[in-house]
Every structure is written in C-alpha cells, then in structure tokens.
Image 1 (tube, rainbow, N blue to C red):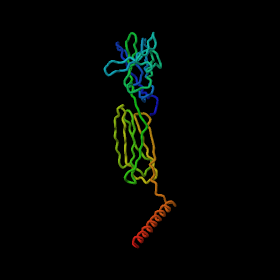
Image 2 (image 1 turned 180 degrees about the horizontal axis):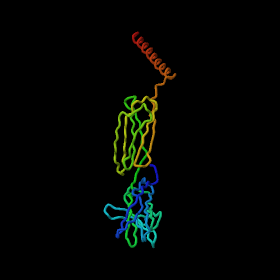
Image 3 (image 1 turned 60 degrees about the vertical axis):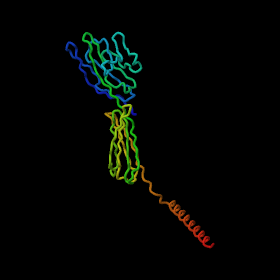
Image 4 (image 1 turned 60 degrees about the horizontal axis):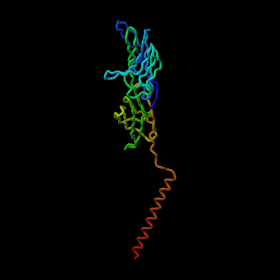
Length: 267
C-alpha cells in the first residue's frame, strides 16, 4: 500500500456568540489520509479572545461525544486515559490548537470537534471530518484464449472506497473486443474491483498491457505486463534430426515386421 501525507481542504467555520457577535475559526472541512498514517487536525481562532480551554472531541452517532484531549489555560495539556499514545498535541495553544492521531484505523474515521471555551462568550466550535482511503497495488493477469489472436486480460485492485480499474494497451493494432467489471465488498470494508477484457488483434509480438487503479484524488497506481509471445516451432537443424530419428525408427520397425512375417510363413 502506498503512503502519502494527509490531504487537507481548508475552509472557515463561523461560530456565533450568544450576544450575536461572530468569530471565525479556521479548520479543515475534510482530512483525507491512508490507513496507518498519522493525521494532523488543527483549529485556529482568528480573533483574539480570552480562551480558558480548548477541547477536542470525536462525534458519536448516539450523540455522546468522546473527549479526546484538552489544553487548559492554567493546567496545560491533558490527554484522556483511553487515548494516550493514540492522540498527542502538536501545537498546544489557546488561539491555535492542533492534535495528531497516530496510525489511523477504520474506527478513527468520522468527524471531530474543537471547542474554544471563551470568557464571557462561551463555546466556539470548529468541525473537521476524517475520511480514510486504502489503495493496494493492482494484480494484472494474462491468460491464453481459445483463439490464437485473442488474449484474456484481467486486473484486480482493492481499495477503500471502491477504486476505478482501467485496462489499457499502448499498441495501436490491439483493441479490447469484450470488457466486463465486477465489484466485491470484503469483510474489512474494502472493495475489490476486477476488470476483465478479451484483447484482439494479437499476433504474438509480445505486446504490453497496462492496468491503472485510481481512488479519489490520491496518486494512481499503474502496473504493466508483456503478453507472452507465441513461440514458433523450431526450424533449425534440431527439426531435421527429430524427423530423421522418427523415420529411422519407422524403417527399423518395418524391417522387423517383414522378417517376422517371413519366418512365420516358412514354418
């Protein structure tokens, strides 16, 4: 599986005070990361306010949000016991606060809140959502067809969410006469997509076939294979030797048969 830094899309969330004043919190709308990567989540209060504490929470479908960590004006950093070693502060501050989630897994996917507890205005909230992806190297297979000028090409790629799998051939004299795609959802939430095609116009010249796996905005993965060329029958001296041996054996067998026949008749 390939590794890359998390891709972040920045935007501004508006928080509204009870008195009707508006303040801007800068955060990420969506953070995309590969399974197993470290993820950086950040929130920044764009106006100077008296902040008592910044709290990070993970949203829960049942409404019972989980407190991950907090930074207090007087007591400093605190990471809740259930998340020690998993969540760490990168920049601990009352105006700009960010955390790192180590080696994210499927259960870490979801939305997170950063809450700025200000005095006397109360809480200001920023929200960012973590979306995980997973893309494995495609498996390209080539097998013979019934027709000597056709080859069956199959490529499978597993990812999360479902990847797009594309077969391609650089040679202009080759084309896909039939094409089909099948998707299978695995127990771990990944999806395996298999594209199979019959390649026509093949004349045994060792042509190259490619397969590309794409997923969201992450870099695509490509693999290539050469179609094995059809080996012609040998035309050198070895062929003559084989033919001579076969003929010689035939002649010997014929002579033995004649001799046996004469011996039998002479009795």
